[in-house]
Amino acid sequence: MTHARQTAQPPAPGRRRPRLWHWFKPRGPRTLVLGICAAVGGLAGAVRGVADGAGAPTVLGLFAIGGLGVLLSVAYLVTYAKEHEGR
Image (cartoon, rainbow, N blue to C red):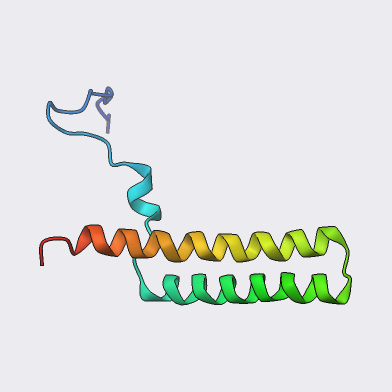
């Protein structure tokens, strides 16, 4: 049995490749909960670290976790607002 060789064809006109950001959009409500928990925990931990006299890497690490939590929460809210715009 012989198989015909397939050659790569360019995509049909009008078809585009999906954007990579579409797959990484924060859509589920668990994302919002994770973002809020990370924001509160990270920022409160950074304040506690400063009060206890922890080292700079510890405080900056906790502050970075809090900042990422805030960004994740805001990204979820923006995505939700764009997807439910016309309702």
